[in-house]
Length: 315
Image (cartoon, rainbow, N blue to C red):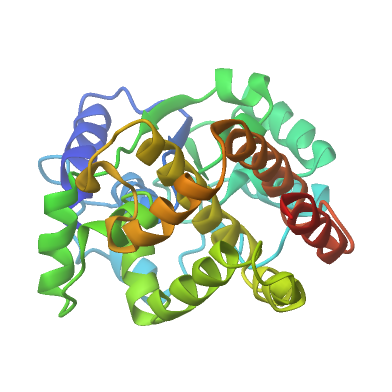
């Protein structure tokens, strides 16, 4: 288990050992924390035939079936699809209503539960209101605000927090990556996001994008190229832009080098701070927040037009 999850697991296992697990849990926290590990371990504990001290035994018949990926009383939705439809939720609800084949309860895991459509969420609500005996429903969510309040209110909640930056850097070093403070902050402190960032060698793409943006006012012909760059992995790259604008505002406010989100690109934030007023930077940042919300997956059929409009407004 990831080291930053161990304290969270201890809290959850203590609840299970004390008989306070209930029938539904919402595991929430930023993406990139590995919350799925907590859900998997909790499912294993709930179904284990010989749990010991709040831990699954890892060798009984149930644990062996989970290792092989074919436990009859454990269900999970795939995380690849953009949305979770009502049929998928109804199927999982029906699974919970059936008798446990191995006699030690049933578990259903819903990763990225915020993907549920309104119909799917309402179908799940019925299951939460009338839980089947000895069943456990585990919802995982990174954007809890997108879940129905009625669903949130019917689940026990456990919040996973971002680990200290130093702990993340130490863990990355153990994985063979010499990360930097800037890279951790760029990825909002989530260790698995930082690891992905490093493995994908995204530093070069970030520097090219933000360097081009800084020069855009002087070289407007860059606009098409910048728009093309933003159309790939849009949410991540808009986040980079937002950090740059915020760093420029911090610079205008007298913040030091180490207080910036991207201290490695301090020259870029200084250039923006010198060329643009606080009003311009604040307006651009606010419009960027709205653009990020509009460009969420499934929101726009053609986000390129909106990206171009934002860049044109900046000019």
